[in-house]
Image (cartoon, rainbow, N blue to C red; front, side, top):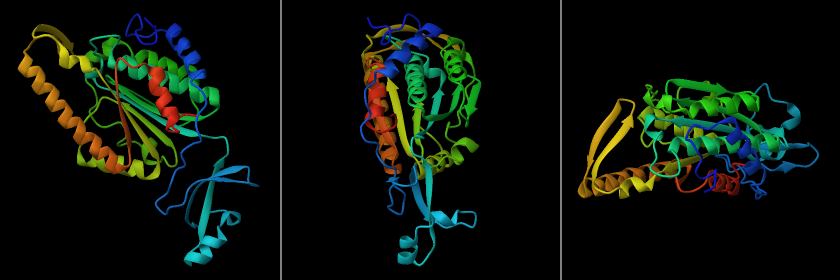
Length: 303
């Protein structure tokens, strides 16, 4: 069995993160990036002569460089407009990883938390290899880590290694959505935002924050499930969670109802995300993190 698909332990070590570097390097070539479209319908495109990439076109502000005024749009609309640029090779990315205690669970191959962390590791390595800017925020257990600067890869991988430890399953987890109540996300514009979480619901304030995030960025939401939980034979099971080990009785009827409830809730979540402009994709734990990373590559979230 592949060590990527089924690592020896859900708690990942340095050797495993080194292995992820090789998978990141050989993901293949990215297709032409999907361009970010602003509300005005303008798209960012490469401008010859500037050595820069245009991110967006917006109304002129007093602090803007006069050299970047778009005179044709200004003449057409009657209002001054400015072109905003970024370095041509500077692909900016924000990684949001949120693991509840329920994510530290799996019936085959590994835990859902581990699969998310493997994927985050590949994203980190790929960003480093391609020279992209990667900022991040991670919450797991009672831990929270964030960086809006170019963090060292070793620091990021060390945080991911810590996140894989099962001790975090027994800690009280912050239930506030990872995209809410933080300057890191409020100030994020024109980035590829990758959300890795097992969260399926949020309150009105969190929804407003997510809508705003999607208005100014391309948001990719990755969900990983263990579909085998709906196929377990009827009987008594010992389940470990943040309350300890509990005995759970499962019947065929209760399993069918749990599956129906999940599918109903997940369909509602997916439809909401689509209405916000968030690109949602669901994967099973039987699928490798390399496959999921290739999906992100095909969507322009990775380069």
